[in-house]
Amino acid sequence: MSRLHTSFVLGYHGCLRIPGEKILSGNSFFEPSENAYDWLGPGVYFWESDPDRAWEWAHNKVARKSCGDPFVVGAIIDLGNCLDLMAQDNLKLVKYAYESLKATHAADPTLGALPVNAASGKGDGDMLLRRLDCAALQHLHVGLESAGEPPFDTVRGLFTEGGPLYPGSGFQAKTHIQIAVRTLTNIKGVFRVESPPHRPRS
Image 1 (tube, rainbow, N blue to C red):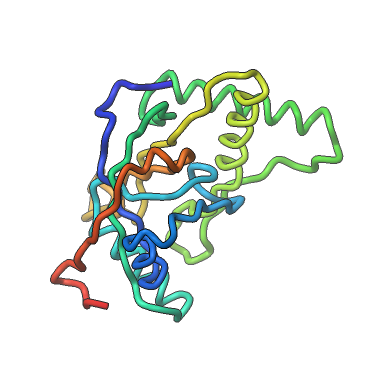
Image 2: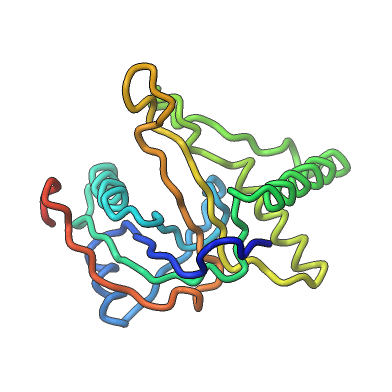
């Protein structure tokens, strides 16, 4: 568990315009993602302090699915009881959860093989399908619940992807911090985010 950081942060959620406008008007709320390959396990996903990256993701989503207009909703997030994957104590928790998950699969053949992380298949080398990490995080959450421990409200992680920023660089072009909000009441408010000038307005 970690509160070794500022509690409130600004997050940016890429989506489509119609559901985004409904969230801003108060007629609906964010829908948690529950894909087996989600990088931080189940939750509502935000790019921390990076509206441009959220717009890029939203435009790519529209390009992939050819549906609707890209949109970004800003949010004020209370990290609360945060599983911060940039803190050593929390990384040890996740490693322990992985070892427990591995032992569980080994003891019960009906569960099949452990999930694996995999690249997207686009040839970029980025590990975009994080089934193993998602399963380990979910195993951790279930284990805490079973033990009667307080649940994590949010999960926060730093990711490097996109290839070198320039030849020989140690920086990656799409490095970012993501937050998965598990306790929706920790989203304290929302606000409109204008499309940056260098991107087409939707």
